[in-house]
Length: 82
Image (cartoon, rainbow, N blue to C red; front, side):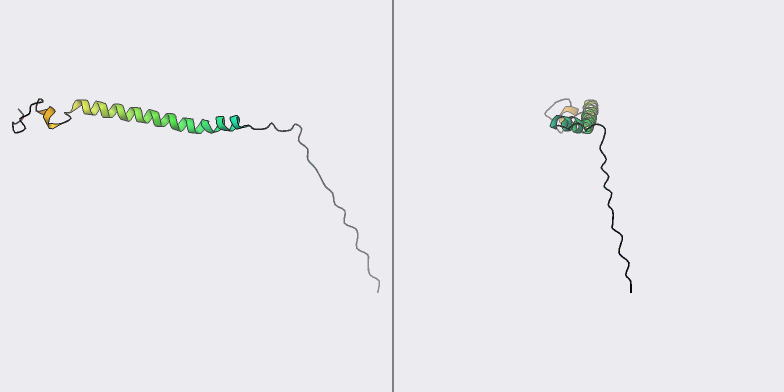
């Protein structure tokens, strides 16, 4: 009985080295990048709020705010509106 000797295992290690090392990202770079999308959302919210406020003011200016104002600011609440 002759046993065959196992062949030695050869390992090849490949190391990939980039051409240039990457630049480090600082706290300021991260903050500026995060304010990009957040800033767009904040500006959209401000514009929507201003539009809603203007629409509310315009709507309220067309109608009387209270019964007293509708009756000409008189204290007699039992008088009918002409």
